[in-house]
Image 1 (tube, helix red, strand yellow):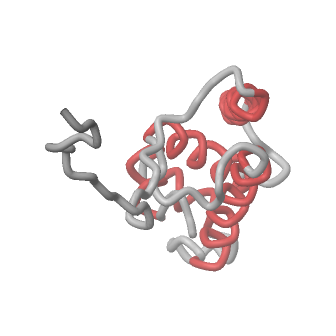
Image 2: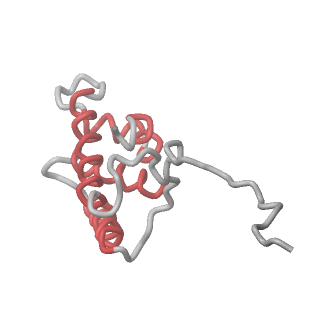
Image 3: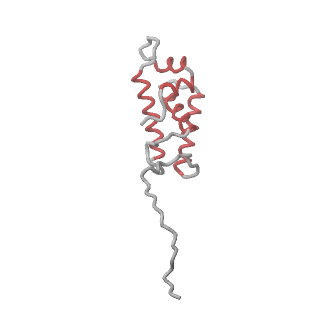
Length: 131
């Protein structure tokens, strides 16, 4: 499962930048394989940090984690020439995930309770005491 989509990258960074860093054959359109690989990279990168503390992949991705996933994908798309801003955002995401893995920060995740079993007991009306 991917934590982000192409549309998330466009919303985060703008379509012009996403096309510029993903158009490997220079035909003016983003290369879907390149985009998919960067999105997969971001998801696996996040999962590698969270695996010890959470069940991965996460069913619901918190918004701040989605933003970091976009940063990781963008970093991957820049290949060998990331700008300092791209590097800084990548590093900030890694530091955050290290803190999550250490237990210093908890993700705001709603766990799936669909497998939980609920039961109730009626209140006791009579007692065993004999008068």
